[in-house]
Image 1 (tube, rainbow, N blue to C red):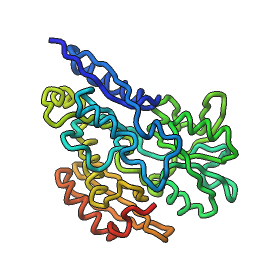
Image 2 (cartoon, rainbow, N blue to C red):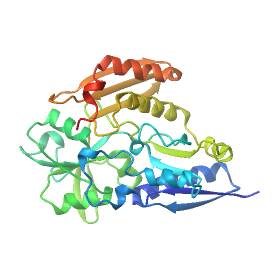
Image 3 (spheres, rainbow, N blue to C red):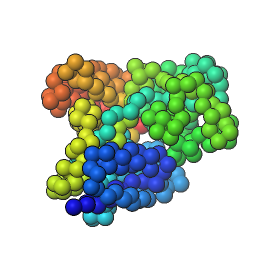
Length: 313
């Protein structure tokens, strides 16, 4: 019997590209499934201006979760880093695709990367984490706010007297712009790119991961998406989200956290910028992947900073 599954997603070019990856993965494992896509406008898509003090968690996911709970879609497709550390009651992240490159990328009008930007250069980013990381290494920079999808951000860089912007490498690659080359072309504009070192620019929790969310009681859809799940990536995402939940870092907290599994062990590293401090508190732990909740708690304790960091931008 042919089954119909409706995927819910945002309408941005990147969101559609990510949903196509989910669609292909499902189709490759279930030839008897018919897949449709429903585009859902979110608050973040409709807002002309986003107050950076209000944070961005849920801005691009809440309406899609509501459509999922209402039965309008069977699967919600998200950029995992956009999801609050607690998803809506009655839903769960049932699967993820393998993690894409998780680095941040500097797209600049100047060659030579971050170190070569002129004194007082204007760099745009919509992330408080990236803002703090940039100023940690280059206190002279003029950091301004930036919003919009990836093409919009690149157009703003071209059209304004800015020197550079910071983007996620995964988004660029999913749109066919590989930052592995030192330069990229976009709509006739030419930019120099540098993959920023992850040791300094520790990514947001979930960065590079496409999350597949379903209704908690929808066993048949769970069975379908289970076959596309990358278990190692899901374990790492769960660890990172557990850390963020303990930190209560969904609002606007400058925090990076990364979990990865090597040789059967999970390694977690986090970076939290406290109010008034230029350099972050950093820490790392390692242990069994199935012990990820304890690892997240241990990392929180090692940093000794949760309460001080809550809600700080």
